[in-house]
Length: 125
Image (cartoon, rainbow, N blue to C red; front, top):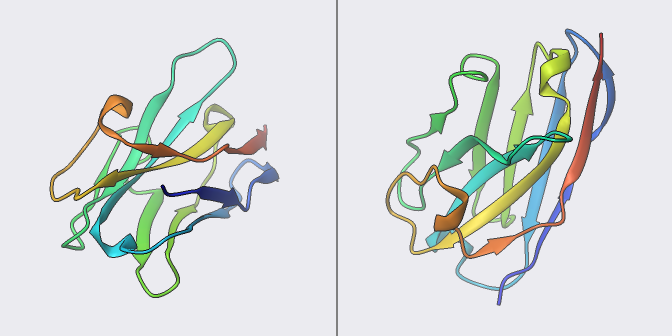
């Protein structure tokens, strides 16, 4: 069993930056693919970014490409989401997710095995 705990959310003005962190309990973190998803009020959960377990290859939603960066520290059991040039439309509850033996690119939330509780990001316009 893996537990994921997110942190780093908050209130920021448009154009600002935030860095989200997601720390995992348990062993074998390096074997997990990690993803970030977000859900705004009244909307479905949507994919934001993902990083596989065995490479540094990353993949982003078009809406955040060039502004967000996902990275993974296997020593600290932590995945990060650096968010720059934030806009009001980025306001959402951001959750991280982990997939066992994740060697591919996983865009669907149904592909992931574990989820954190989420951290709220609010961007004021």
